[in-house]
Image (cartoon, rainbow, N blue to C red; front, side, top):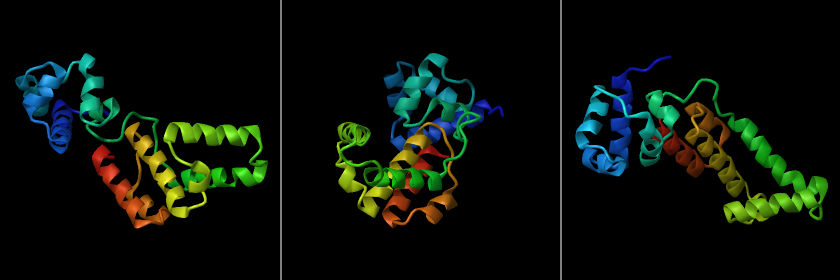
Length: 176
């Protein structure tokens, strides 16, 4: 599906307002005039392709979402399946029991998570609340990469109100 300049401009304006930038501030960060930003937002022109990566970073969105006016990224990204993500995280919690804590694979997985996420993954997986935090983290990263998520799915699959709220806020932020 092709999106009009006006639709894309409206999305840019919505994201800019959510972040709290003025047209002048956004223009300065991208080294373009506030008039250029205004033209994008009115649909009179589009940002140059060379600006899209920086623009998406400043607006806390993705290039895919800019080019699709916030409508879910490129074709083929698909929908997030929270049930499968939850199942995968639960399998990780069973990994120690299945292969043993003295297994090289298990220790490598734990070390990798501990290093990159700065969390005691092994003890966190024993706590349902913390385990659900991992599910939400995976879902948010997928949203940031242009995947879609059915809002009703969030309430049905997640157990804790806090994590439901976090994911609903992310859905609004990434406008999926």
